[in-house]
Length: 319
Image (cartoon, rainbow, N blue to C red):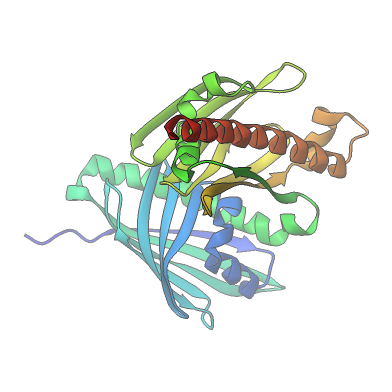
């Protein structure tokens, strides 16, 4: 008995920007976690001039999924086709295409298509995928339009920085401390409450109440993708009031018989939130300094606690 044809969807968006600028952003997957709300992390598995294989972690209907896709790149036609090589249930197969077409007056039409089949062609699973594809496609196209029409990198909203700590301890111990975030409320004074779930090994959802210097707390919710024993990347799904986007990474690297641990933050600020949070006379520059200080203070405190943990463990095993 033959299979039914795959499900097909198409979503469209008019963008007030040249087609090539939009194509370049679709190709540059390193920017996707900052641009596309569903995307948590993307990395290359293979990379060539006209094709590549990428690994993606993203939210779908309030769950987190990871899959591997092959992409074919056509800069002249401004088309990017994709096909999932390793899908996450309930998806059995998924393919599609980004098509960017000039629309006159410096604008372009972006078309995003999907062709998919659910595992076992199950009707309930098919409906679930339809909902996820529709929700994510609408979100991604709106975010793509906003990112190209008003780049955060050009107006001071984008902020990126690193903090580094040297540890006289084993990288695996440093990583374990950062990975075991479910214990941070007992290990870190600035963490008031923490809830960690890890239904899939290496894929964590972390909800945390963080204390501020004035004694108040704010709640964040993050997805963390863990790569033992070297790095943890994350994206906040629920951010503090000043930020529309916050992604980051913990990198743990051997350095001789010691360890270098680096905390990286990438943030997009919300200018309209600045007066409410920092006062009517505060500027975007004030917000940049405030966020840099607050995030750097907490991540550095976490790294110093990891340092103490790893160095104590090394001393404990020395003769």
